[in-house]
Length: 86
Image 1: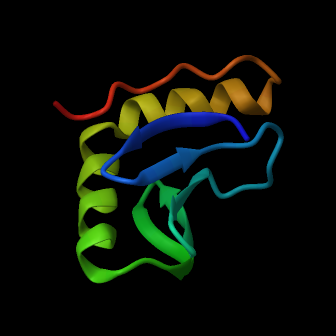
Image 2: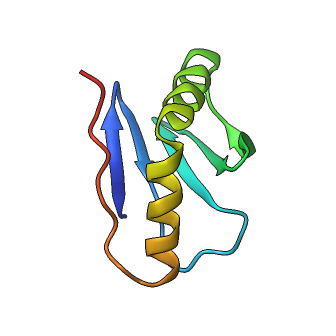
C-alpha cells in the first residue's frame, strides 16, 4: 500500500495506474473514503465528520502535491511523501 502521508491515525494512500478521476484513499480505522483531487470532494465511502473535515482541509492545502503524485502514479513512477502536519 503506497502511503503518501500519515497523521492523527489517518492514512493517505494512492495506487499506481488507477482510473480517473484523480483521487486518493483516506483510511481511518474501519472507515475508508475515495477522495477526489480536483475538485476536492468525497467520491465514495465514509469517514467520521471530524476526520472528513481534516482530510478535506489537508487535501486542499496540498492539492498541487496530490495532483503531482497522481501523475507519477499514472506513469508508474514513485510517489513523493507529503509531510504530516506538525
